[in-house]
Length: 64
Image (tube, rainbow, N blue to C red; front, side, top):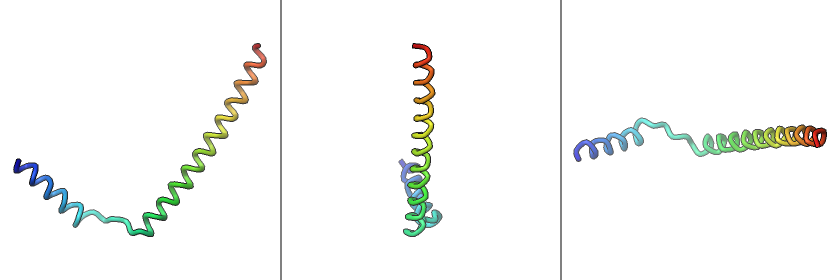
């Protein structure tokens, strides 16, 4: 039980005194970057999926 209590105290001290938390501005800037990166990746996947669908339709139309 003493080890668990010591672990909790050490974790708390590390979170309070050693971790550098981002400011609100840094956090919002990071959120905007993640949002735009997600949109770009989603658009790329959409395009690749459309191209793959067109290629598969072409091959299926040639076979059947």
